Image (cartoon, rainbow, N blue to C red; front, side, top):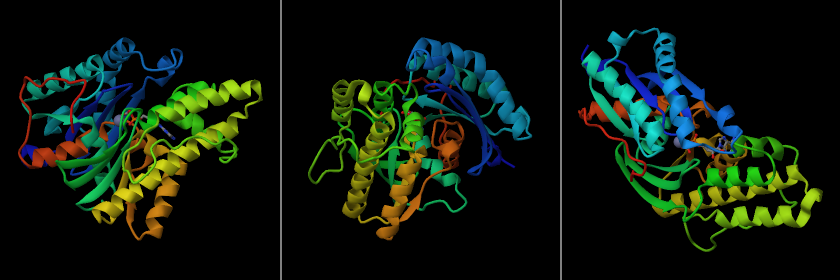
Length: 333
Ligand code: KG4
Ligand code: ZN
């Protein structure tokens, strides 16, 4: 068995989750995620310096748990993959340093992976993975992008947000409604009993576009809370906010599919964990005879398994990084 046939250990620490996973030929043998959410909750959002320190504490136990769960020891690993861009520099550095040290000491290849490529290829872990080319809607805390995925490694951004990401719209809306951080799940839970038609909120851009704009939504929720004061029905407001985000994402994704003449849509990233969004997108695809694919919830939010899957494609092509691998806060796909 060559090094490239062996399982890959993957590490992800770009924001507020410390994660390590073992992936073998796209199948996920383990995927451990230590979340810092409880710590950041008291500050209402991610504090970069605190995130980096928490990664330092969690990284080695998380790596060891990933290996134990996969029933492997270090010597059975063939390569180490790590998210090296984009993200919080201090947070990324912790993962990259651990990855380099391990790969160097074990004498195995190291590969730096773009976080969004991990999200995009997360659907390749499915038993019946979507083929190529396909269209991918990446929706996370920092990104809202419609991407044409020609093949692994060849991506064309065809639509994107002009301001806030969809996840930010959930997070900021949640904070304004007093539902706390992180906002996506809090809004989803509050929306369960709410009336999505109660409050009219703006959809942002109009016309024949595949771009997004969510900043007006945040302002509209602020105005709503000022106008309604203590009379506001938080469940109805959460349902109305979720409805507008879901409607806009679905409408733009369907338009992109039509423009590109493609018949497979994938939905990935933290916001893809939203059940209302998954259901609406699936129904829209069904109506249009498109194949719809989205990873299980634990592979939507940040995780190292998706980094390992992306790495398996790159390593198979003979790519790897040097020992001078650096981290980057911003990076194009
Ligand atoms: O991909 P991700 O874990 O981290 C980034 O790369 O940004 O995405 C995090 C985002 C947050 O904005 C969070 O509120 C959102 O995903 N999110 C959700 C849900 N779960 C997480 N948004 C809507 N509904 C959810 N159930
Ligand atoms: Zn992410």
